[in-house]
Each structure stands twice: as C-alpha cells, then as structure tokens.
Image (cartoon, rainbow, N blue to C red; front, top):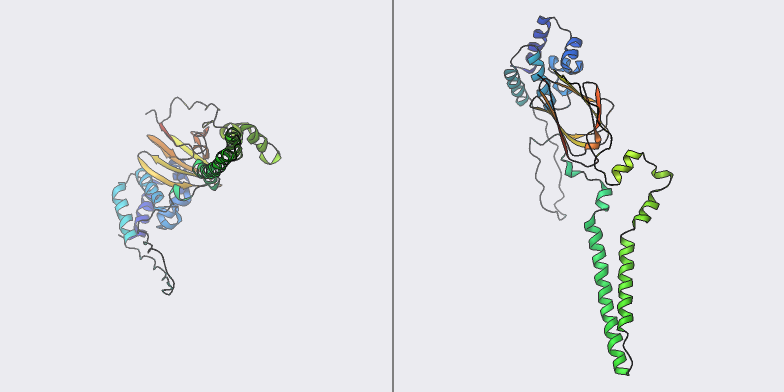
Length: 307
C-alpha cells in the first residue's frame, strides 16, 4: 500500500460522510492544512512524525475508521522511502585527532535533549565554580600566612623580642573575610545593582526572581461539566514539554515561542509535563489558566473530562 493511497482512503471516507475540511477542523480541532496534508500523503508538511501519528489516529476515529491498520500502512510507507545519502567527511590523517566520534543512530530524536543547551547565566552563577575559586584563594592566603607566622614568631625569639602572633592572626582573619566578602556580595549590594532603568521588571517577575517558584495569581475555575477538553498552549519561554492527549503522546521535545499556539482536543484526559513551567501558558475550554508554575520548575498537570 503506497502512502498516497492512505490519503485516498481518508479523503474518500470524508467525502462519503459529506464533510468539508473546514467542518472537520471545527469538530476535531486539527488544522485544515494538516488534514489536507494527510489526504495528499504529504507528511513532510506536518511538524514531526509524532504529529502525523496523533493526527492520523484522531482523524481515522472521527471518520469511523480503524486507526491501527492506517498507522501500520503509514509506517510501512515510511520504511520504504529512500534514505538521504550522507555527505562524505574528509579527514586530514596528517594531524592528530582525538577519540573517534560515533555516528548518530538512525532513530535519533528530532528535538535535542534539554541538558544539551544550558543557559550560560546559570553556569556562570553556579556555586561549584565560585566555591572552588574561594577555596583556592583561602589556601594560598593560609600558606602565605603560615610562612609569615613562622618568621614573625621565631625571629623575635631569636632577637629577644616579643612575637607578633596575635597581630598576625588578626591580619589573616581580616584578609580571609575580605576575600569572602568580595566573592559573595551582600544582599544590600545585590539589591543596589539590580536597581536602575535597565532592570525594571513587573511585580510578578520580581517575585519569581526573588525565590518564589510559583506565581501568586489564583487560577480561574474551569467549567463544572466538560464533555471534551479544548487545549490551547502558548509558549512564553523556551521549555521542554510533553503533551499527552487521551493516552497518546502528541508532542515531546523543546518548545519555543511562536506566533501560533499548540491546539488539541481530548475526549478523556490531557496531561502536560514541562521542565520550565513559567514558559508554558495553558487555556482550557477558553478559560486562560496562565503559566503552569515558576521558571525552571518541573511541573505535571492533568485535566479530565466529566464523562
């Protein structure tokens, strides 16, 4: 069974029921251009193979078709497509090279893992690097102090004078304290640096930066009866996100701010997982719930219908 025949089955079933693509879009919440791509067999127009499988399953159920045979035909058609020829890489054998790099597997995921892209601001502000730097400075000062202490203690004894142990100890303590104060700014200094026109932020954002992991706003209540769940997700900041609709994972990867929101309709359950809750804003049945949580917060939310 060829891929274009799969689209022919969908189109014939839709025309038999007398639906237009616009009517199907209104009922399934699947964009009409994606429905057209399924019927044309042009699966490259859909964002990912995961979207293809999810939309194909929901479209088949709407048309009264068994989704599993259609999914099997889609997978068979994909496996028969010619693979792209990889471009040869020329290696200069005259120069020393490091360990050989392994080629990525054929089923390499479309989205990069979250831990491959880390904000440099968090790397620079980590406690590990700062702690090691302070420790090295303290050790160097301690060694120099010991040498100086030995000279100050024994040289006066040789000359018949009092040693300067007390004064030296106080000097070392003051030097260490000064180093620690320079490495770790006081709360007053931090507050002074953040003031100014270049760092004016809204009150809610200031609360999050001050350490409050969740927004203080109260969510509006959802309708008491929900036969279906119309989900709309607006990405405010780059975030890892996984969306499961009726037990099917329709999105899993890095989501970035775009002009168009993500839209799905669930008959039973909606489940959202994210690694940056403040970047994922949710609307359920036209009720805006806002961001799921704070910046960098791992959050899982589940909504179910009242059927």
